[in-house]
Length: 97
Picture (cartoon, rainbow, N blue to C red):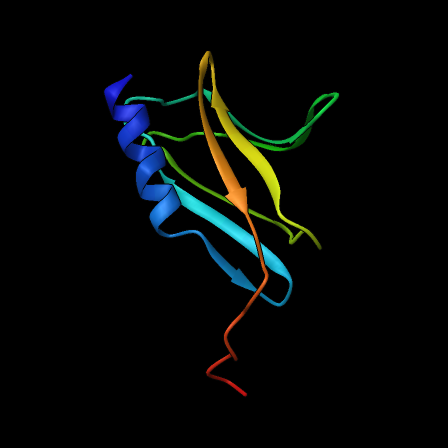
């Protein structure tokens, strides 16, 4: 459980936004073969957006369209859950511009 929380904490640190999409990537230790789910949270429940089967390194990456307004999401692995808030009120210009 501690490794799962640490892995997700690292995912939060490297969450990024680009071209009206956001990405969440990271690594979950000791989770080979398990499925990690990205879900949207709403008043009436959760909605499954994407999932990935973790390999022996436990690396994952989700890329999804950014919400127009702040929304809540969660990463779920078995019974462990970590909540995320995605808000794109301001995005900095791309270094490529």
